[in-house]
Image (cartoon, rainbow, N blue to C red; front, side, top):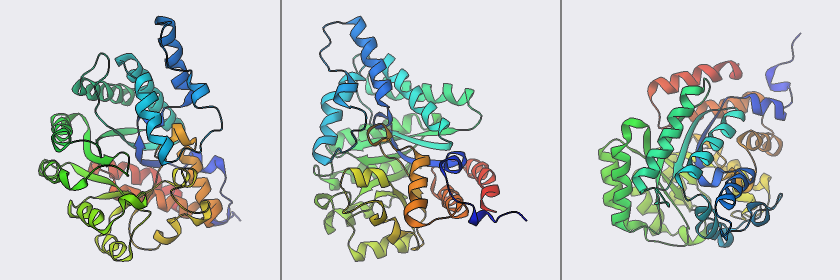
Length: 348
C-alpha cells in the first residue's frame, strides 16, 4: 500500500520539483554574487581604471545579515553602479530568469524600478528587460514571466507618473502591474494617489510594500496605502489589529518573504516566529516569495522547505499553498488555468 502524500516527509528534492509561483522578486536583488562577479570581471577587463571592488569581496559568501541600514546603500552605492550598461542588464536578467526556472518556478512576476544607465534611458532599460524576458520565454517550456514596474518611495509624484506611463506604454509586452518599494524609512506615500489611479484606469494591478518596518507602519500611512485598493501587499509585518481585520475583509493577497524578514531582522526571533503562522488561517491568499535571493541566498524551493520545517506543513499543504497563489497572479485567466493544471496532481 502506498504511503499517503501527507505522510511522505518534505525534503529539498520535493520542494525543488514542486511547481512554484514567485510574485515578489526584485530583479537587481535577485542577481547572484557569481553573476555580479562575472559582470565586474568583464567591466574591469575593458576598463582597468574601474574603481568598484569585486562583488565577491563586497558580498562575501555566507554574508546574508543585511539590515535596513546596510541593504539599500548596497544597491544605490554599489550594485546599480556595477549593472549600469545594456550588456550588464542583459547578462544579469537572463541569469536571474535561468536561476528561477532551474529552481522549479513555473510563473514569475519580476519587478524592477526603471532607471537610466550608461547607455540606456529609463524606457530603454524597460525595453531591454522585456526583450530578455521575451527571448527567454521563447526558449523555455516551463516558466512564464511578466514584469512589474516599481515606484521607489523616494520618487516624486512626477517620477511616479513617469513609471506608470512606461507601464501603460509597454503593457502589451507583458507589464502587468505597479509596485511601491524602496527604503521604508523614507518618502510620503500620499503623493502617489494620481499615479496609482491612472495605473488602475489602464487595468494595471497594484502591489505595495506594506508595514515593512515600524517607521512605515503608522495608521495614516497604512490606511493611505489601502485606499489605493491594492490587489497584493508585501511583507505585512507591523500591522495594527484594525488594519489586519480590513486586510482579511478584503482578502488581499499577501506576499511573505521568510528569509529576508529573518536575516534583515525585520521580525523578532527566527523562522518559527514568522508571521506566516498568524496569516495562514485568516482567509487571505498567501504567496511565499524570495524578495532578494541574490542578497539573502535562499531560493524559493528553500523557502518552502523552511515552511515545512518550521510550521509542520505536509507535501500536500505546500502544494495547496502554491496552488492558492494562482488566485492573485497578475497574469491572464489562461495562465491561471495552466498553473492549476501543473499543480493539481501535487494536491491529490
